[in-house]
Image (cartoon, rainbow, N blue to C red; front, side, top):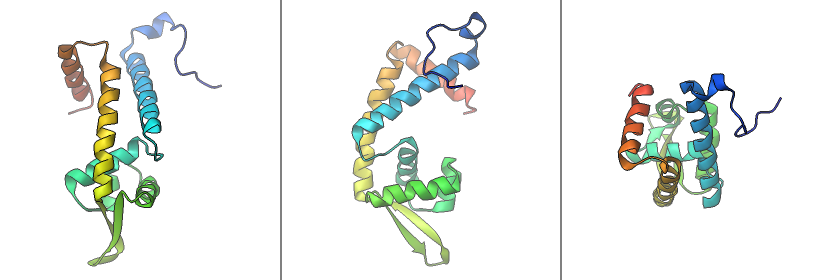
Length: 150
């Protein structure tokens, strides 16, 4: 049985449950992200962005460490890095100290693409949080951080 993006009616037992509301908000956020990345082109998705952000912030890293640090499965990291490498956004080189390990770094084109994606994401955040005042948006982010253990 297939679930639809947003039900027309929500049963009373669900409509005020935080788990339901968070799930609905997450589904809306995911749809906005997918649409925003699709409009940007290049076939990039959220996990590509996560890898680029990590590489820019933390610098060159082994594929295995990059996967652990970003919470992306090792096989998915390999596939995503292949996508990024094919677009010239990252470079992978064999680690001279450990010949079986590859070190990944972001390229200048990757940094430029990351800045473009930041703009896309800024617009998505604005759209997602538009129903809230600026003070409520800050409060919402703080509440979400606490719920996520940060």
